[in-house]
Amino acid sequence: MKKQIVILSAVAGLAVGATIALAGSEPGTGIVLSKHDMNLQTGNGAIADSKGRVCAFCHTPHHKLDAADLDYNPLWSHDISTGTYIAYGEKSTSFDATIGADPLSGPSRLCMSCHDGVIAVDQHYGISGTATGSHLQGDDFGQVGVGLGKDLSNDHPIGFMIEDAILNDGTASDGGITAFGNALNAVLVTSNPRFQSKNMTDLGYKLASNQSLFTCASCHEVHNKDNNEEAFLYDKQAGSAFCLMCHNK
Image (cartoon, helix red, strand yellow):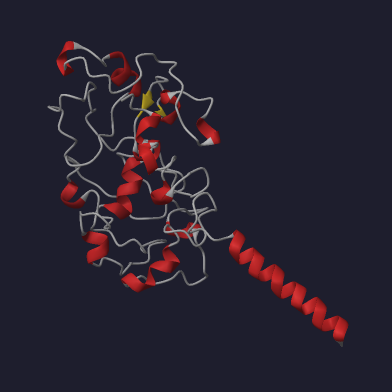
């Protein structure tokens, strides 16, 4: 009996250890238990998946949704945000690139499937979601409605070519401000091992033209695997290390 108790205690210890290992609230520990585990949004009125699935809130192995304006569709199961979005203002003196006709090209439109402040974050597999509370609808610090009202003009620009921004940087149009490194092979300055041998163009979504499009995924790792900070950011916010990955200030 004593031996059995010892064994059971060891198993219990492993279970606790496994829980800690899967603590997705920590950067880089996976999607389960992270802020993108929609089963944990029940406090915001969300309905947990009936089978306890996590990936299902975004992906499906069969019967994916199709949309004419999507150029990137990784077996998507969540309602897709449609319509035209207002892009970041191109009048900024520190912005030397051109945002394309659709600022949400690449994976960004999929991000807006939850962050538009309209579509319920727990909607999936054709099941109507219920999580559309103020925390999810607001466009303020601590709230997730980034594209509220289809307006991205007060957010970091997306939808531009990284190569374009680098080549146009430091010109008279911005008073000689060096926002980016001045070479296409400028190596990222980062504490994230994934990017220590990469350059800025490696942050982009690769188009058929082989150009690098800056998208939401250029800053955020949605699966909480390769990020180095909360909010799924690739590097630390302390000392603005994350900003300095690209911006040479």
